Amino acid sequence: MLCEEFTAAGIPIKRADNDADVVIIETAIKQFKRPNTTVVVGEDVDLLILLTARTPIDKIIYFLKPGKAQVQSTIYSSQSLTAYPKCQTHILFLHAITGCDTTSAIFKREVFTKIDSSPHDIVTNGIRFLLAMYGAPKKIDSIDKYRYLRFVKSAWNKKTVQLSSLPPTSASAFQHLYRVYYQVQVWLGNELDPEEWGWKLIDNCLDPIQTLLPPAPEKLLNTIFCNCKTDCSKTKCIINNGQFGVNARYLLRKLSYIYNKYY
Image 1 (cartoon, helix red, strand yellow):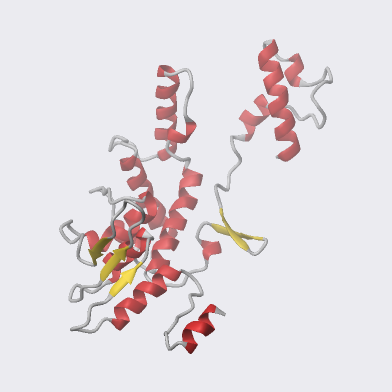
Image 2 (cartoon, one colour; image 1 turned 120 degrees about the vertical axis):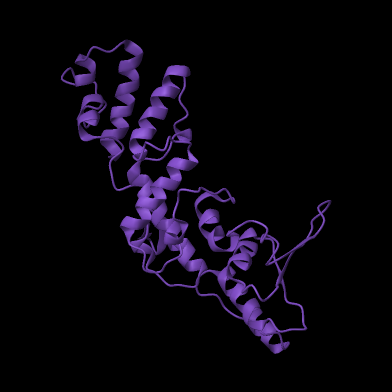
């Protein structure tokens, strides 16, 4: 209905079948014509990121972020970030994987902008970037190994370990890097099948694949969790018969019940 009203009023419109931000920026670039000034108005920082990455260097397009209450309106241009070396080339990847403009000198970021990059290249270079981002020594090339070392160090120094502060597992990182590659390609206007790049279709909606592995190795789960299908009250339960204290037995029974029921 809104589209019809705009069309009737002589206002040209475009419908976005996928990423609306991409359509907005592509339209702005196509409509650019000197001596007129082209301005994109919006609040989403993705618009400025896309404007920076995709506007040809011989054109200048402006981005206006309207102010609210005590916050004044701000205006940027497609060349506002050109003071940063190679910003236009790498900003899409950096925004997709970190949400900021932090960079790493050891990472081949161009892998994520090529339409024909292989999953192996994406994962190999992506893991190197993640390791650098988490401050891993250059001699470490396994994110699982570094995750373990970080866990041991945290467990030694603190009573409580914040697992969210640890690097992701390799299986989880793979899926995240696939989604980063997919998002960068979408921003570049390339069409890929999301279900081949870290997403799964559930009830007609795309959900991210967190990992393809169980929460822990089977041997470890069998050590911690019993196979009871009830409340672990029977004497044959390995937890009740194990060498655990009262509080530990109670906690393990609860965890085992949840694990047996849902996993």
